[in-house]
Amino acid sequence: MKYIGTKRLETERLILRKMKLEDAEAAYNNWCSHDKVCKYTLWNKHKNVEETKELYKMWVKDYDNLDTYRWIVELKDTHEVIGTIDVVSKKYLKFGSCEIGYCYGDKYWNNGYATEALKAVIKFLFEEADAEVIYAEHSTLNPGSGKVMQKSGMKFEGVQRSRIVDNDNIRNDLASYSITKEEYFNEH
Figure 1: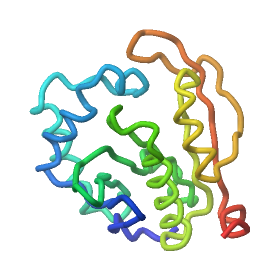
Figure 2: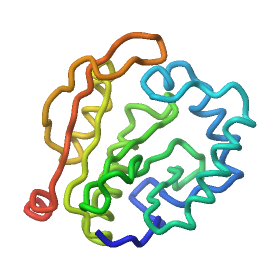
Figure 3: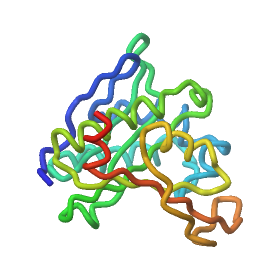
Figure 4: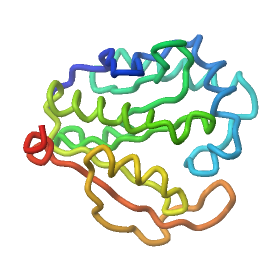
C-alpha cells in the first residue's frame, strides 16, 4: 500500500476533504452530540463543543502522517458538513488492509450520501493508494450501515457474536463486510 495521505475527493453531490478545526462546531451540532447517532458508535456522545474541538485538533495534526486517511464530508451545493469517513485503524495497513468507519448526522440519513462517500473512498484506496482489501463492521442493531456497505460493493463476511457493548449498555453482534482489490477491478 502506498502511504499518500488524505486527498480531496469529489462526487456528484459531495466534497470529501481534510477536516479543519473550524469543522468541530458543525460536527458537534450535526452528529457528535446526538443520541440517535451515538447509539451506534463505539465512542460516547460529546458533552460539549470543546470536547469535539480537542478531538479535531488531534485529528488535524494526524494529517502530518501520510498513513492517515480521514475526510470530512460536506454537501457540494451548500457546503454543509454532514459527517466523516476514515480509515479507522492502521493495524493492518502494512498488509494493504484498510478498515473504514463513518458517521453522519441523522438528518442526512437515507439520502444515499454515506454510500456515495464510501464508494469514493473505496475507489481512492484501490486506485490511488493501492490497497489490497477494504473492510468495515457495524452493529447488527444498525442494519442501515450494512446496507451502505452492500450498496458500495462490499460482501458480507459473517457475524462476530456478542462482540461489543453499545452506548445503551446493550451487547451487540458485529457484522463484517469487505471488498478485495480483485473484486473491485472486476466490477470497474
